[in-house]
Image 1 (cartoon, rainbow, N blue to C red):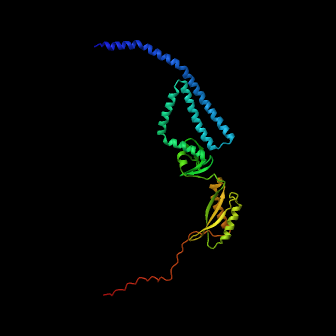
Image 2 (cartoon, rainbow, N blue to C red):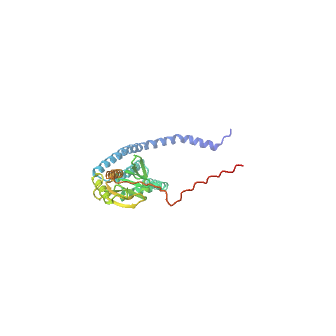
Image 3 (cartoon, one colour):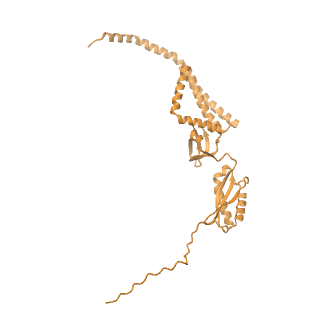
Length: 301
């Protein structure tokens, strides 16, 4: 076995310094332990305090009758800011320099911004929805192929509840940049249905009957006034357009009620609701078809 004197000296030095290294490590850990314990206590208390503040703010917002859209968005954003502030306090207690924290936050913000561009557009879309007041919680909106009642607006997503109780999450960026149809912002909304009557029916009599029936129905509004107009002369009937105004909450049930009312009113007045018919008549100008000539009997041999 070959002995190297340089290696032997190095090993002996490390063996002599090893106890000092572990002792210094243990002393540093013991010195750091109080700050770690304080930071842990501050973090736990901060989490409890943040939840308490969130509940108090929620109750205060309800009492102040703040708009629900702004309330949900503000609480979501406020919770994130509270937790970020709590983490910075804990890092400061642990002895991390503020300059280092700022540098780490800046670098992390740049990295997150590049990686989550869509999320940042959703965040910006949330602010646009909030300040432009495109809709409120409880409104029925149509955004592209999705539609439903607005349940909440968070910092990234808008949550809808469809009429069949499906939950739909829409990115705020696509909501704010797309076409939004709001069925709930106005006090009334118009329903139009086509009505077909026979050419033999009197238009003014039909109009009077339909308007009288509409006036007696509690769902249809008197102002704006309902109307009946002639839309087209179809092949088998005269097409009328029946227009009524309802409250937004009755929008989806009003069309069925109007169709039922129209059918019963016209049936009671014995006004025909025609349907397409096709009648075939033989033409007298065409000659009768000639029967095939009979074969002549051949001669018998």
